Amino acid sequence: MARQPHRPVSRPALSTPRRIAKPPPAEPRLLLFNKPFDVLTQFSGGDGRATLKDFIKAPGVYPAGRLDRDSEGLLLLTSDGRLQARIADPRHKLAKTYWVQVEGESDDEQLQRLREGVQLNDGLTLPAEVRRLAEPELWPREPPVRFRKTVPSSWLELVIREGRNRQVRRMTAAVGLPTLRLVRVRIGPWTLDGLAPGEWREVPAQLK
Image 1 (spheres, rainbow, N blue to C red):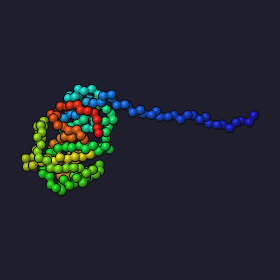
Image 2 (tube, rainbow, N blue to C red):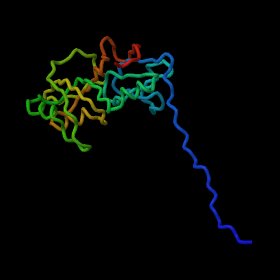
Image 3 (spheres, rainbow, N blue to C red):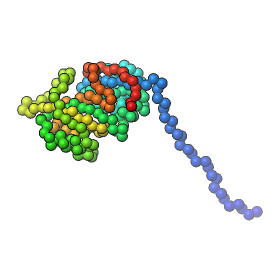
């Protein structure tokens, strides 16, 4: 009997399971928090430093974006993963407003460089909105800012739409204005108004 040619056995391809998006919570939460200086933007760990768990007892909320340990001001927390992504993802270019105390007095050339975009080691920044600012009425920082007696300081309002690591500090340093104090006062439509350091309040969880 003639042997039949060998035919490979076909096997069904293994399909990768589709990732199902987690539905938003039935009642999503959004908190506005005034993060004090030297507080880490995390709930766990900290190695002895203060973290969010020392101030916020609301379960199931997570930071939407970050704020450096040595920066102060508005931090958003939400229980809605999709809202968290829209707030934190730089692709959505949500405006973030900072009040920045810098070493030295700014001149027009320095402000224009910030408006045009500054070359950093990770590339050119997007243009920022910037203006000189009279010293704002803020809470005392603990510990106080260290000044050099021979160098004056001044304030700027800076609006950016990116989220690079320590971006504002690097931008001001690049134009010769080192940051002494950094306070975020607005993210998109949400502001710091009425919140003392360490305080938080809940607002409707929506972004138009």
